[in-house]
Length: 259
Image (cartoon, rainbow, N blue to C red; front, side):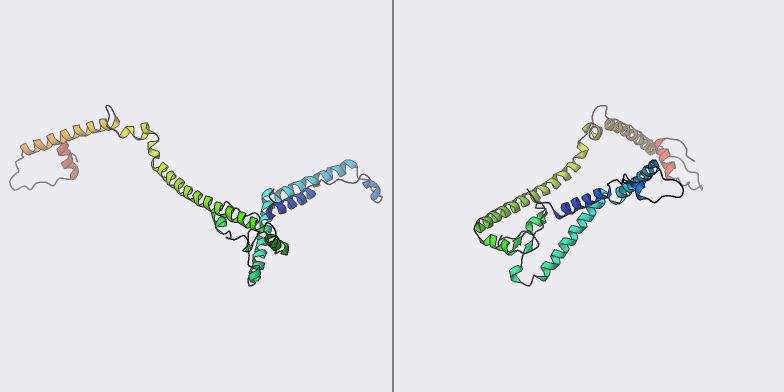
């Protein structure tokens, strides 16, 4: 069974402390005997219970607001981040010693991440350790009986992990390409709505529009032919009035005079 991460350990500790804070307050059974004799009557048990109940409600609301699950997780992650920052600084100070030149891998490192996989050292005996503190017994354990077997097993598993990571990256590239092609083919998903209206079929929308264009073309051709056959005499000494584009179009289409 894998050991829990630092974040999980700290989050569990914080939850246990919050549960202590959420324990309801209860007055002692003999609380009246502990008080001095009052000058004006005694407080009743009901009054004390109501007061304690209101205090417990306020404590519960306060804990729910301040010590939420997200807040607890955030604090635990900050603790782990500070912990590894100190470890990195400590490793940097000891980096001048070649005997302590190691590659620290976090206990909760995500070995499914390509960058983490690529950062694994090639040799198991080249300074690999899973904990920030150097312990002599760890080095002795690698050099003792079974050390060669562990090194061979590590090398084999690292190569297999690198191969699988490369295959996954290649599949991710293909997946991105296929998703792009799927987006390009999206208009073809509903052919009756996206393709059929653009096809020339009998009684189709495009066929009807082409029929309207043919009628309009025939009318324009006829009007142009009439204009070529008929000429209007100009009055001598009177210049021809300029025509606008709308008037020219109306004359061709036979719409009459346009003001």
